[in-house]
Image (cartoon, rainbow, N blue to C red; front, side, top):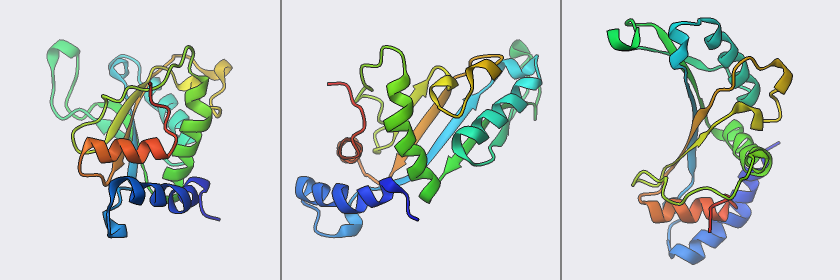
Length: 180
């Protein structure tokens, strides 16, 4: 069964974008390419359990096994050695990407305390959007009782848009909660 938001994109977002942007070819219309969720774990230098906890939490949140990121070079000031594990990330595509995007917009972001919407200024110049989440508890799969340490994450939504304006129109038509 196709993801709910994939059908929503085909049936509602594409016709709106054709009307708004005036693109003639359906392949010109921006679409979601991938979503990357990254947890940078600086305190992993002193506590190796944090990596394992983060891996299980990211697996629960995304439904996909994360990749562990390692330090490229040693930095003595940060007590960091080359090839030391310092974070983990997941790249979601296709069905899992649309399912995660649906959950992020409709379930997780409304659970953020004092949520007033997301900034329109977090685009990178090429139509990709990055947002930071301060705590992993906003996701329904994470049980508050089982958490030892609250960790944040960066979520990057990569689109096929050529500029910020097209990326904004795409996310706005997905009912992305931008601040007014």
